[in-house]
Image (tube, one colour):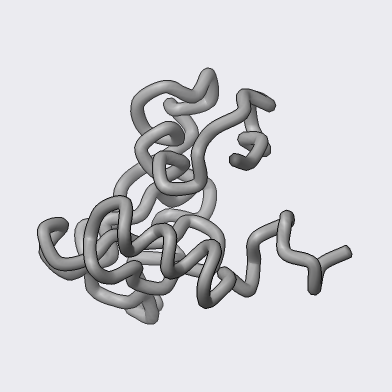
Amino acid sequence: MVNCTYCKQTVEICSLNSHYINECTSKKDFRVCSRCKEPILVNFYDKHISEKNCLPAKNQNIASRCPLCHNDVEPSGKQGWIIHLLEEGCPNNPRNNNNY
């Protein structure tokens, strides 16, 4: 779980990208990149698109994208998130012991 930076709602990490574009009270401030499929703040969208540095999204049946570290989470689904967050440890997870 993580608190949304924009609305302070507590959200599961695996649902944070979806939260930004569908539920967040600041959802109007986001646009989805057609390349990486991640929500990008409107203020940074044009720069994001023009740089073309983002990692292209894989099919959602193969992988999910971590909203914290922007790496692919494989396999897609619960097992992939368990591996990424608990076994490997997302480097940008605020709950990691390394970040305290």
